[in-house]
Every structure is written in C-alpha cells, then in structure tokens.
Amino acid sequence: MTGRNQDAIKKTSAGLLKLIFPHKGAETVEMDELKICLNLAVESRQRILDQLAISHPGEFKNIKLVETIKLIG
Image (tube, rainbow, N blue to C red; front, side, top):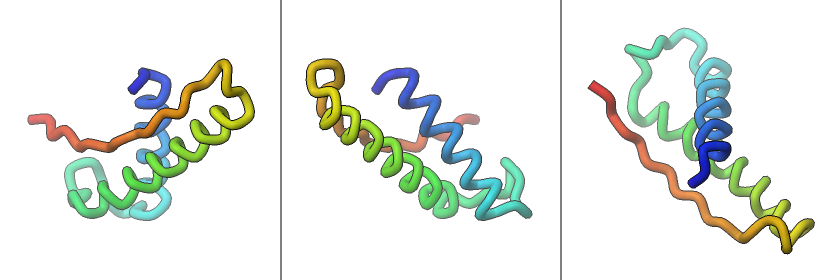
C-alpha cells in the first residue's frame, strides 16, 4: 500500500471517528468503534482506486486494499 493511500485512510478514519463518536478521545475509543471507521475509510478509498483504474487503465492498476490495526504502546 502506498503512503498516499495510507494517509488518505488515516485521515478519513480520523474524520469519521470525530463525526460518529465526538464524545470519545484517543484514549477512550474502543477497538470495535475504530474498526467501523477504518472499514468505511478503506471501502471509500477502494472505490476511488477502482474508479481510477477504470478511467485511466494505463496509469492506475487494479489494487485491492486490506486494513490492519496496529496497536502502539
């Protein structure tokens, strides 16, 4: 996965967390809540990549994204 895709997924996930769970902080968010936002972010990025592969097949390859959650600390 490229850095651009990783950044897009991180930013989308962070935005979704703030919108869906505004009362939660980084320390209080649950793993299942994070998974909900991460799955939505990956799905939206996958749709963008799919459309790019259709509209510009010579420039963009058909890529399948997979999400993983890495716990820090």
